[in-house]
Length: 179
Image (cartoon, rainbow, N blue to C red; front, side):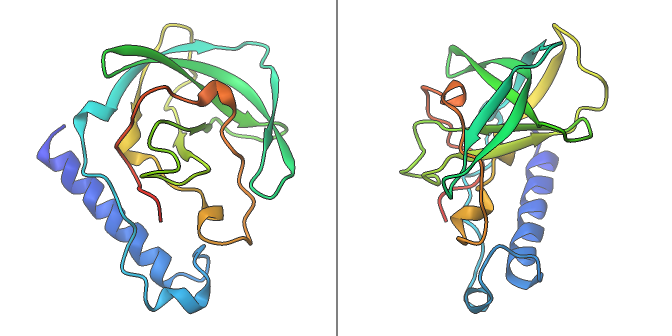
C-alpha cells in the first residue's frame, strides 16, 4: 500500500465523517449530529488489501438473509471469493439482490472482531467490478473499506446480517470499528 493510497483512504473517511455530521440522508439521528466527531477506524493496513480468486455461479442460488429488524431479504449468491488472510485460505460470497439490476456485489461478513472491536451485526463491503467476472479472475478485496451498516446508528434502518458462509474464522482489524 502506498502512502498515496493511505492518504486517499483517509480523505474518503473524512468525507464520510462530514456526510454523517451534515447530510440530511445521514443515518445518525438529527439530535446526535452536532456532537458527532467522526467514525472510528482501524489504521490503513496493506495486509488486508488482498487479491481474491473468483468463482462465478452461473446459476446463482437464492440465499435468505435475516435482517436487523427480524425480517428476511433474498439475495443471489453470484460469486465466491477465495482469499488468503493471516496465512490461511478463506472464502467469502458476493451477492446480488434478487430482482436487482447492476453488477455491484454485496459482501457482508463477520470476523473475530465482530461484537468486540466492530459492530455486533457484522460489516459490509461493496464491489463494482470494471468487467464481467469469470472463473479464475483475480480481484482486489480491500477490507480497509469495510464499513458498518446504517442500522448500527439508527433503528430506522433494516440491514441484512451476514450469513454463516461469510463468517470468517480470523481477525480482520481493518475498516470501520464499532460506533
